Length: 260
Length: 260
Image (cartoon, rainbow over all chains, first blue to last red; front, top):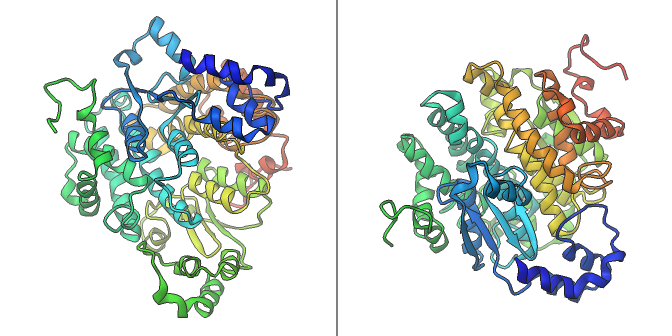
């Protein structure tokens, strides 16, 4: 991050007093430049020549989603493992400054620290629209986001390992995934082609793959969900979904690693 | 809905064969017209002179969010109570055609059936941008959405009454709300002014108010969260937040109703 910070200071320090924003941010460069109305400088700041950094854990489905989006949009990034992120201590105290929930993923990009998978992907979509993950039509966008929400707020939070542990019920994750997949399978019947929304890859596909992986790990009978299974299988052939796979990440133990 | 359907048929039936969309939809009018490139007709279809209909349950926090967004954007709508929505039977079977998860809210708007609170509000934001709930700057949008996600996927799904029942733990909801509010309080220190994002009302405010209401119902000690409490209190003075309150809805029992 030091490279980014130095560069920012050069370009923007003189603009500091012009800020109209009431929102406080440690990463004021972007906002100040944006606020000054100098769009050329804004662009410079928006895409500094520094690789984005992703704090990631290989098996976290939220990190997995962000990796798919980055790979799909062909954004090169540095992978930062953080196996330590659940433990208390100095590293965690420092990490909390980046991510107030103390969770992964965190993405440092364009001189800004972004958290939470959905807002990160919406940000990538807004700033790197070339390979879109959302349709242009507002109704279709709402449909794509609704499929996404079935997983994002309807399934994933409930089947999280911490939550299952707290419940003390070893069938907890399986129960909630099956319940959610029943609705998702029904919803996909309205929208699916080869993928979740017709024949183009879109946001719900990014969410579907890590969720199916977890479903299989907790022994959900996927034959009950033929459409979800078919889409998952089609996505497994797509490059970005291959490279972003949990078992192809640097922090995945060698014995579990996928060979290709 | 019959009025809308008739009108749609008149305008669009001749365009049917021109569709390039692979996404199937019962509400094909919008997409076909859009696809035909006749932008004037698209606009006509996008905003038919029919009041939006919201399927709502007064105490559901997801419905509450949509009510705040509709009221904030001054969109008049018809309120459809659906106390029956958890029960099996004919009504529910019909409702599943509108909402594949069988949940509330569902919003019928512009001739389309939309589900899930976040996608609905993003749709309102995209089609009715006049009173925005998201900043223009992509970084600030990501920050606003990240605060929103702390509640949307980090707290609300876990503290849901169905989930608490399933856990068999009467302190379940309290536990997850306190855990989530600890992170939210920390995150708000970076962004808050009078409201969650500076001094303008934005998306996370829409999520905060129903979540605080539920926190109080399960006896969360709100004195531990002074910033959340202060923002909640400021929002309680705002018209849209008053009119959208759970205890001011037509399906709220009279004995619980707020008088003003």
